[in-house]
Image (tube, rainbow, N blue to C red; front, side, top):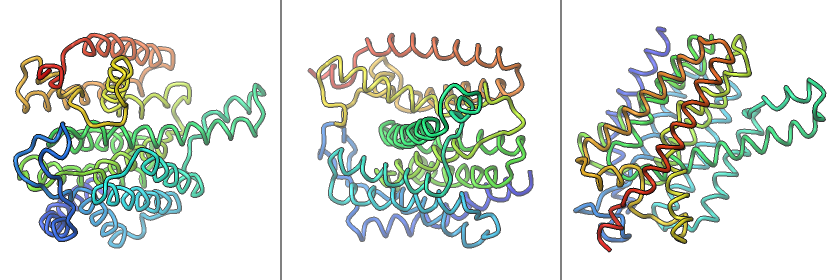
Length: 349
């Protein structure tokens, strides 16, 4: 556990150290979130969008300091994160429509696949003779693209209040680091622990110090890195029938929030990609929770589901799948119940 702990501490320290320079750089580049520029932007003063700058600076500083931990797969992850970061900066500076955002995400996912970072579990079906190897690879690539773009967007969508996305990054990356370390994947554990440490720094500057927002460049880069950790986590000694559920459960809260938003907007004939106050956080505050307690509730949910994901690793495959299905059904009922609750936008109409 020494190396993951070292990377966590180093990541947190460097992100705390680089936080203020990132804040100044964002202001100099005019990466500012202006109050009232969209209906959901209710903050009081223009705020720098420095999260992506801090995240990228810290990650590449660590890559230079610990080059012995940069293997081919990590190079692919770092290269893909640069693509996401550039498109995110473009969005923060100019504002992008959905099409170029998706193009950037697909390009970053293609960089991952070109570097050998993709899911392979459909290969099980081809090995068993159910489908051809070519079809299995095509399905693997499709699932990889869907996973990367889905999680990248999910973290960006849920970033609706200070501390939510960064806190979820701390929790998910911390669980990934622990799971990878127990599985003997020391490189994955090292970088997941680093992401946990960086997310702690992001949480401080975004929530505690209230100096800057993550912005699209920060939230999307964080989502891309978490999605990449989910692909890299591949415990060979675990039963593949059940180990695939771990990344899904560790990222269940942003997946839940995205599903809630998409369902709600489709039902109301609203554009899915617009910014509105209809996320899980907004519904909790509309029900009477304080902003602070609404954020804590989302983090508590992530900790709970993450704990269940860890438990599933030590259960027989059938019990692990049962636990996953029970969690899935419970989440579905919660989603349908919460979708019926009013949003902050509804309350003002």
